[in-house]
Length: 345
Ligand SMILES: NC(=O)C1=CN([C@@H]2O[C@H](COP(=O)(O)OP(=O)(O)OC[C@H]3O[C@@H](n4cnc5c(N)ncnc54)[C@H](OP(=O)(O)O)[C@@H]3O)[C@@H](O)[C@H]2O)C=CC1
Ligand SMILES: CC(=O)N[C@@H](CCC(=O)OP(=O)(O)O)C(=O)O
Image (tube, rainbow, N blue to C red; front, top):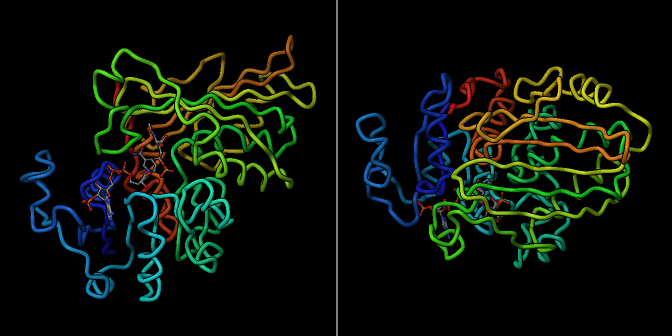
């Protein structure tokens, strides 16, 4: 099956290319770049030279639509909302790594992204691509809104407890930390080496666009609106997200009962691993892989549950999950092309 990637020189794209290169059934037909078309991929990313000799191409929608079955958007916000509908009209399926189709409410998109939302009919047609939760809907979708990196770690950590009614949703506090590649390849003062190295910075408190996304999905699972407290931090490492989540336990539940319930919830899911015996996950233990590792502690003394959820932001938080969603769309085993052990150390 032939696919194309739009936003070809970004980090999401180069990670898609890494997985697609080894995928047994998918082939990269075209890599589209609005800034460097005409160049070879190897001039932008020399580590691909001699292995994957591909030109970066200019986007011509009609031509591309005739060449591929699926398009991946690895573009900044506000690009796919206009472009994806053009491909959908040509019966080309779209998997969007940006946030353009994640929020059901156009008003929320306008408020948190600061520009008008996609046409409402496309927002309604889009399936939220949290693979472990919406596998069946993704299988029948034409447009998949791949989740944000923080929401992926946070929701996989929270949803089993929410579904079982084991926590008080209004007490949820999420303290999340990300490596710098989460901000993409572009340069900025915040991600400049002297500013972020040996430093730990909180940012976008109360203003992060992942707040409405997480609230939307928890609210859907809980069956009523939920408001969360969410803080984000930049950590001086390249990859990785750790989302540490606190919530009041609704009924008396032990750590072992919680672990058993989470293990049962994700029984059929190869990429979510629940830690046992007091082991807690670390970002290195998922580095370069599509795993989400979750540790749990139900504190009898305080009545609080602590959930620690780690992912690689570029893999499970973006491109790996996008490939998982492509596998779901095509009816292939979800792990096809994604069976990598994490890189350690
Ligand atoms: N980095 C991460 O961990 C995660 C990222 N995401 C989301 O995935 C998307 C891609 O992220 P990432 O790869 O990190 O970002 P990058 O900034 O690294 O790459 C984005 C690429 O999009 C292209 N682009 C930039 N501006 C435009 C434009 N106006 N029109 C068309 N194309 C444009 C550029 O490639 P070119 O010039 O070659 O076209 C650019 O390299 C974003 O929406 C991001 O929020 C989601 C989850 C995690
Ligand atoms: C470290 C860092 O800056 N991370 C980015 C992650 C955003 C992102 O990737 O946004 P979407 O997944 O919603 O597209 C941020 O916090 O804005």
